[in-house]
Length: 341
Image 1 (cartoon, one colour):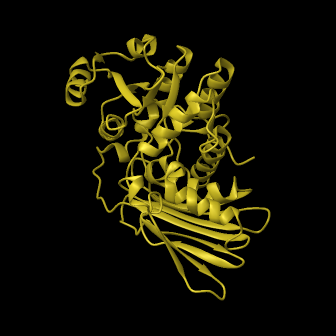
Image 2: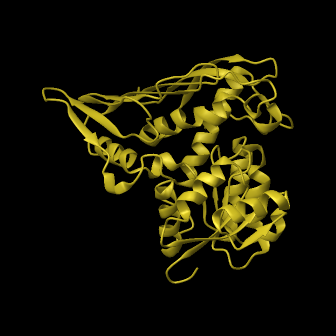
């Protein structure tokens, strides 16, 4: 890492890579120096689009590039284990898109690689890094609504998506849960930690992936969370956190909120709005900034997006899939789909 700039490599050239890279190139302390794809043509097109000096038509060249400080992995999530694993084994630090992997077994393997090798690894759960979500979490932690009793969150897209779409393809980890449901589950666990029990129901496609899923998560202290995701119906993407002394409502876009409202017993409602200085509400700069902060501090894990938290979310997603009967090619009941600890 140079004294002033963190040098990034980008693995994959899809929409998320373009969005993340577009934010990186506007950050004065970030420099995108290489991109890789399994297609040399796509890598060159991406490099030309963003002014990236090196374009590789294979993953291995990116892994071996010694002038990279950290690699952003944004392949389809069915390839996260292979892609992030290759980077970690080569000694690269990694920011890996969510869902982190297909299942907790793969996630645990990546975490072990990073910890054993002393490499930085973080899930790109940008919601956790968003200033408004961090503000909400701090309010809850400070007791603004008392003890949390219930969390509600939903994320659904209207579709319809044809059977050939990646969201319907079991080989690509298709379905609503991993692509969209990871947000409501992660939001609930941000505030309550890993649940002690999971109940879930889903509507499955002919291909065997979930078209919509609803789950009730419960904790030993009596707290509950209701989460819903869908690729057959657009939802409000709203969330609420109810406590013993009040409630916080996010009316829309809970994973990148522009505002939320705090209701406290016996007081007027209080609205919290995003600071314009933080930039566009959908900016990915906040997660990039957290990665660069951690690297400069010599940290191998982020306290904002901790690896143990990522593993906990993956256990919950596995438990939900186990309850509704979604299993991906190559998985087995003994190793891949696990219930919560």
